[in-house]
Length: 516
Image 1 (cartoon, helix red, strand yellow):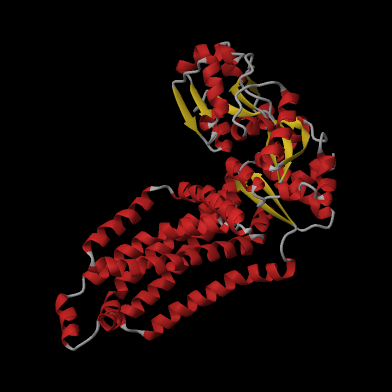
Image 2 (tube, helix red, strand yellow; image 1 turned 90 degrees about the vertical axis):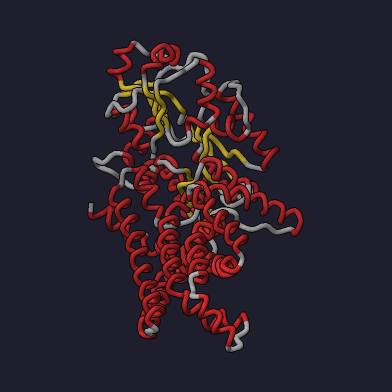
């Protein structure tokens, strides 16, 4: 427990710094847009309705979905900029997070600004006109000072919302306090989850309190409160950003960026690749917890230099192929087509498959007489199927469903770790397991045979971005990994990270795997 807490606190300055930087920039940009718009809306009822409806519509979109939607849009714009101007811009990480959180912060600021200005006594406004004030003078000397407490209340709400939503920027490649939560949930590291939640909640409470001082100072014309709140925010911002500035000055730009999706095996393999590059004297940045589609797009765009993906995922989701010509044919086809289409290099297969496979508890499978997916189809109407967060939207599931006519009583989605827990607790009868997961043997699960070959092979392969295709140092560091990791070794490494007893970090598991 103490070791896990120490490990979590060691990376807190970096994650907190990025979380503060992202939240502060989003809130500042939200204020810069929503405050003038709210003032204008208070004077024009038609604009007020349109602006509030648009801001309210943004709030109906889940913040994680909003973050995810900005990435492909920015990627497209970056590609256009590259073709037209010769230079693109980073579409992964900070920028999509900033834009999404800015939109998310605007509603309370806009609503309170419009309400604050509209709520001023008309007699006061008329008196200001009577003494000869211009519209600009009336706004700055009368209306804004009177509406300031209401506007500040909206800013406080926006700040709390933004700080909370910023934890969801992790899947689009932005470092934040959400890294603790996403990785901790996957590896069942509850210390990391608690650190992330506590740090995010504490940050929100502190910022809300300091903004509350400013709000009280404005309402009571108390300069001491204003100064105390403003100085507290400034000092907190400097303290949070200082570790980032020191790190940037001492390390410079990372030579390589290694990516990973959002499950334990990916964390381990990313650490393994990063360790080998660092052994060659290179500096490496890790970008983990990426969505599956985000990871490949980022690699093709040159925002990642390398990551591990799976042949079946690439075959079905990237190339949109529905056939299954066999393991070697899939690898050969990927090597040719990814290079021709996107310039992506398939450096080599690591030596094991992490295949999708439907799994059941052994006792339940024997009780029902289920050994294959064809057997399962007969029993499915009375069973509950559990899948990971993306399985039911993937073409592989559509292929299996079509091939065997599977129709379950219910389908439920789980974060991968909880999917296995659901099977153990009988909340699910069947799950979409991963063949290299150590929990299959540990929990005595049965993988159901696929006699029709509906699922493609899933060899773990190292992918390299187009800009690193000819990089000799990267090839020298990562090339020797090809064919060196068998499925038993990967299962053992995954189990060491995923289970509570004797739990190890992804970095420790990667070092053990690298010594094999």
